[in-house]
Length: 102
Image (cartoon, rainbow, N blue to C red; front, side, top):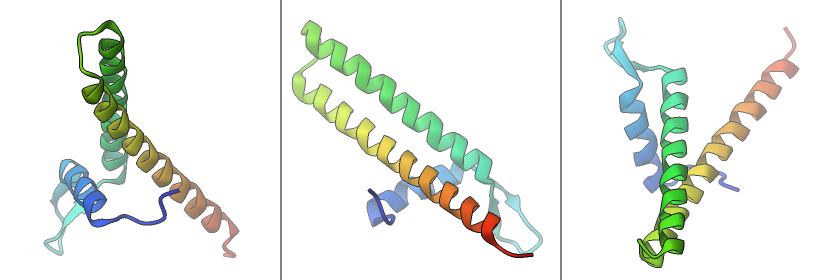
């Protein structure tokens, strides 16, 4: 399970965040829209899964090399693991918030 974001993953998150940045707030710093960030991550993951599926079918039919198919599948697996890790963090945060006393 992914427990933290390493430097390679942080570049992915910052790239996704650039797509989700809204205009600067009153403090002058841009605000990141969480829903747009999650939508961008989900879209990226789904497209990687589709590409890996097409590469696997191409490898079986002989149109694509096995190395390309394995590379696409590993990339899709990594993105899926990241999405699951983010989902788990969101769920654990929500659970902690519901346990807080008001």
